[in-house]
Image (cartoon, rainbow, N blue to C red; front, side, top):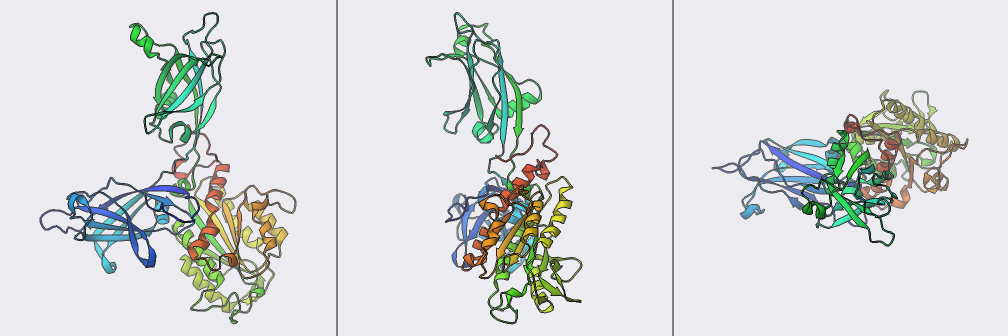
Length: 550
């Protein structure tokens, strides 16, 4: 599987399966049609690409659908570049060889694929020429598997009586089949004394525990008469699958004959040793970050930049806002590293870009939430648009103060509040605040963060420069729950604070990883608390209970 041999990366958010097909491929064979296969490549050292996997060869087809699936580890906080290359394969047995004809390639990021779920792109030949009408389609599916838990309640009727002077003391064991044919005990009920029609207590199991998240995996129930010395008497068994349990329960027919094979062989008239009934089944899906993204949830990013005087005069090379064409300043480095990841999850690729702490034209009054493009619409086209707006803004404003961030948090919170009223998991907001000092309006900021913790938003604060940021760590709820000045606790931890100097020598990828690592958990926490399923599932939930965090 691709992306498995990693160094010190954190745990993968998920594993993704990629399915491929092509249309209108170029025909490189003079007598027959091409025999295409697709290679998957990932970046290697010195800007090269390395092949990590390859599909089978589909013989004589210009519109192949490949059965081989690529499995890739997925990390939200990284830009994971992928390249797909299609070849007309001439090697023996479909193996790649040097004589294979290149039919076209396509580069993208894994984030783009999962955000679109199904992505079709034109195939390009060398030097970026289009390969006729050729296209490649990649479909992503999340196979992480931790998708919930189930509540089950069993009872039985008319069980065989195994005891001479009293009735049986039955208990039920549930087993699942393993890959190697062995059986794994997944649950054992309590013993119900002296009862041939016992009702066992309801119990909860994760789907991975019950059936390894494969709903067709064989399950077996065994009913025993309990013996205090441990020599339990076998009453009978039944076989099913979780898929069958759900279908039978929906139709009101969830019962199985409890069969003892010994008796079945001996007596022709034997029917069963009782009946086991599934009295209740509640399925609770636990949705992953990828479920929400692939369900159509967009992530909207707002960037807020500190234009207070403590940054230093931008014309001075010591200023944190100094623009050097050869060496981007810390603001630009943090902005680009985070923005490059976020833009894959927003279909219009537009960022809101705001400034605070400056005197702005025309009247040169201090503003704590102005659009850095000085337009009524504060959005910029892509991360490059934000960079250009920032560079154009610097000569037009007077750096001033104080460092008040509560107005911008409240501004984004208003957008998030409007989104909350839709009752759908459709838009989540990230506010990236870049600042060179401890905030001045700490009480108002704490109040604004506690209010925002009830909304679909996360706040990332990057401390730029060498100031003492100790007081900022208070806002990051890692050391305990953040409280407003009135003592109201934040509903969830939505702030991540990162001092840029600790990552000064890190690559943009390492910076983005550190800054964005908590976002997937924050997204899932918010929608789980609101009991909102991913949008594509919203219409299918029906019987399934609310989504919950495990």
